[in-house]
Length: 498
Ligand code: B12
Ligand code: SF4
Image (cartoon, rainbow, N blue to C red; front, side, top):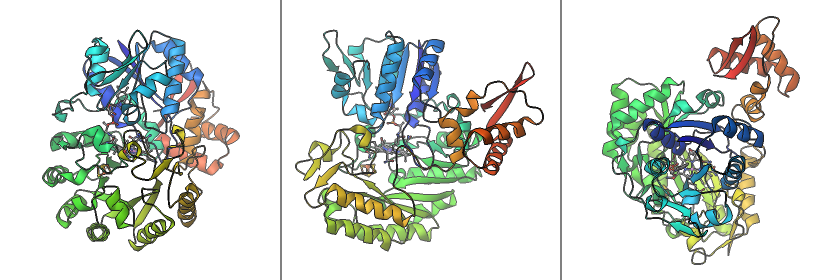
């Protein structure tokens, strides 16, 4: 059984992240002796020809793809293309969107064979092992008569330490490094809270499951070995279990590792002690889910925090020399023009970095399932619009225009244009231009007169709209760091991402 895992595109801002879901899936497959390849369409051109070429050349038996709601349409389209090249391929899709919309997915997309619900690590093994679909927990599939069948829920993995490390080597980390990305690590899964706009705790369960700190830091060392300088802990709530987090920090300190890291936290799961320890171990940023500057809204969305506690937790982090990103969601239940002002004022009052997202009622979230009860009108099911950067809902007191205008003001304040899926703001625009258009790959074998690096710079300066200076700086830097390499074949130079 050969598996092809595909990372679909999405309009990221700043830099892309190698998705942990696919990293884990590829890790477990490889560990069990299965052949796996990755087609990464997030950091290269997404084209029908490329997908067709890959399928014909690699001939996978299974194609798996991951997605969230906003890139579900793109992911589904990619599986459709795979199926059209070879109808015998088993097409599998996983991630939080399809987990909570399995019937809809299989009904509207006949080219998708299996939806994997929640954790897929062992589910994918059952699939490639050829187990009878009706006996595989945690999937949805189509019966011979076309009806969609959901199998039993799969029990969450009790001991995360039995999972092999994520297979980072299957991804071209050089591309992510050139795009200035950081490495991601998951130290544990699960969150005991149930904020009504989030499906995090429904994905990972409400009981925290924590990995052995030694293994976590072994994995960090491995990730740093690829050249990453920064790490983000992708846990829903890294500060959930202080005893565990203290041990993780102790392990970093004991090994003398020097790297900056960041994490998601709740304002009520931090104290001065843990923040100081985190700082000592290299933590430079925490992101607090603050969500609203209005207490009634916080209560309504079951956030279970107070504005005073937010103020306190921001101060505690700053005192510990950790930068804070306060993350807000506008358009929540109960939102009015007044509460929008409350949120803007509160965000400014905190005197820290802050960001706004717009409520997107994802499948599986309580706010979607009980939209009427929460006074939310859902305006569209066009999933591509669920990027949390524009209003797709209204409340009785706030129209989509009211909500969007807050976002406009926020980005005006930052002197930045509104997020535009067609033109993502990236930290390294040159790298993005090259990858998005597969420019390096399309150069083919070259016969430079002098230095191959100088020759590449000259060629690129002729074909892309970046300054020669910028191109020269970028190319030389990536070449020196081994991210962009050339091979010599029959006396000709062939460039590639390393
Ligand atoms: C870390 C994180 C991020 C990081 C990194 C994202 C990334 N691409 O890796 C950052 C901060 C960049 C981010 C960005 C965004 N995020 Co986010 N994020 C998370 C978080 C907290 C953890 C995700 C994670 O890494 N989990 C650990 C891995 C191991 O689990 P997993 O990804 O779920 O994968 C498992 C299964 O889903 C399944 N699986 C997944 N894919 C596949 C594929 C196959 C073939 C198979 C067999 C199985 C399988 O098996 C995997 C292993 O068990 C989740 C909350 C959560 N707990 O799910 C939100 C979450 C995924 N994010 C969410 C959102 C909305 C976003 C953004 C749209 C926000 C924005 N407006 O920018 C973007 C979208 C980016 C994207 N395309 O992923 C939502 C998604 C809801 C939805 N239905 O769309 C979540 C669920 C939080 C919420 N609000 O409910 N996010
Ligand atoms: S928003 Fe954060 S605290 Fe609330 S359920 Fe989601 S992950 Fe847990």
